[in-house]
Length: 168
Image (cartoon, rainbow, N blue to C red; front, side, top):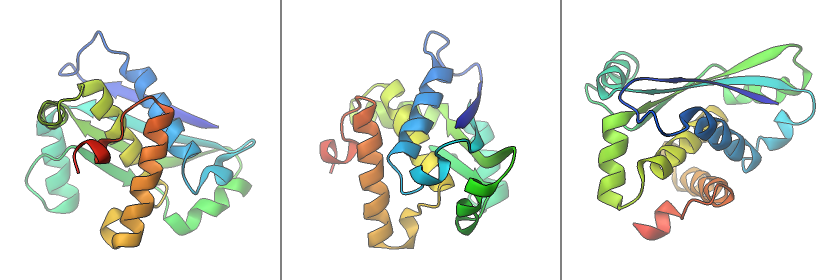
């Protein structure tokens, strides 16, 4: 079972159900990932999703990645991918990590792609969750293709159009 703790800053449209969106996107990513069997049954794992400002994401990106700019999503895994199999034997709740989404960057990218902020935010949460599960598109073409395929499956399950087909 995945528990999703969500925090939404005031930049994000209060009429949108960001808490439910985060919960659905995280669970779709898990269901379509190679790690789905690890998180089955009685395993309890927690993920934190924070919808926040570009300013906060820029500060986190500078502190943790040495990049002094805002980015659309950051993931902070609490477990090494090699530790994921141990979740099946863990007692209690395991913290998988944190996902942080920048409002301004998300909104700008959504506008540029002609899609809703809601759908783009779903994509970013799915993307971030896959990073927490050990996917890494920066480790080569095969990893990037596997991650993209899992993203497409998860987004399709959420009723979100394929972001890669639409825009190359």
